[in-house]
Image (cartoon, rainbow, N blue to C red; front, top):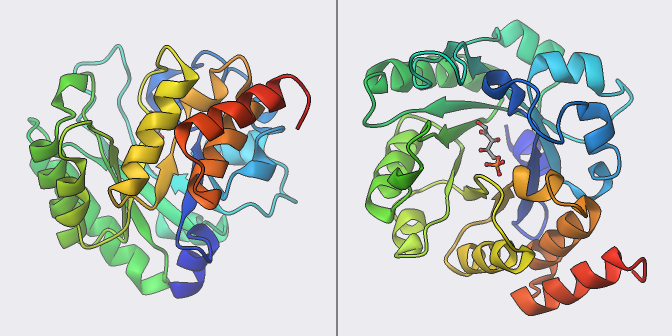
Amino acid sequence: MKNRLAQLIQKDGKALFLPIDHGYFQGPTHKLEKPRETIKPLLPYADAIMLTRGVLRNCVDPANTKPVILRVSGGTSVVGEDLANEGLTTSITEIVRLNASAVSMSVFVGSKYEHQSLINLTKLVNECEDYGVPVMAVTAVGKELEKREARYLALCCRIAAELGARVVKTYYCPEKFHKVVEGCPVPVVIAGGPKVDSELEVFEFVYDGMQKGAIGVNLGRNVWQSEYPVAMIRAIRAIIHENYAPKEAQGLFEQVKAGKA
Ligand code: 5RP
């Protein structure tokens, strides 16, 4: 367990995870139509990639040594009835066989499927703990993006940690994000959500989230849907591992974009 966690969370205690699992309920998401091509230039700058077994099997070179966080919940789609109605998709044998450094699954607190998703989490934790595989719980909101506020996120993160998640992925919120982190006894990483208008906005929320206790990010669309994904991931990496302020990160972004760094 400690060895796997050390593959994900770096020596400085920080982490940059690159999620490309969106197709498991969204299908061929914009700029992720060909995952192999999307991740190729980004992999050197990520501490781990998060993806499903299907994309791992078909779009990632088996010689890849970048740690893998395997998405092991699913069974819903954007055109289906309810995104919260997820089940576990991948057996522990497959998780171990694929040499995952961790697994991730979504919990939907407050939804019609709250109980089901939380029991799924406990089942997964029970199996994974036996093999030393950390579980990262994703506090999902489905289509209800307005749920992303501190009181709700703190509730979700705490419940996920209490039920055995080793890491929790949640959303950043501008108000009282420190309360989300302080109430969660395991490391918290921030998801990005839908692409926002400017790069600086991303750098600002990543920086603020880190100042308030997050250990890093699990940030997808705001990286690979950017016109300059490599510049984006390098700037975010500098915030996480080199403590760059948002404007310094913007400066690095501009330099990489101009081919000067
Ligand atoms: C999809 C996920 C994503 O991994 C997570 O939302 C992070 O990606 P993004 O930054 O694009 O929101 O769990 O269900």
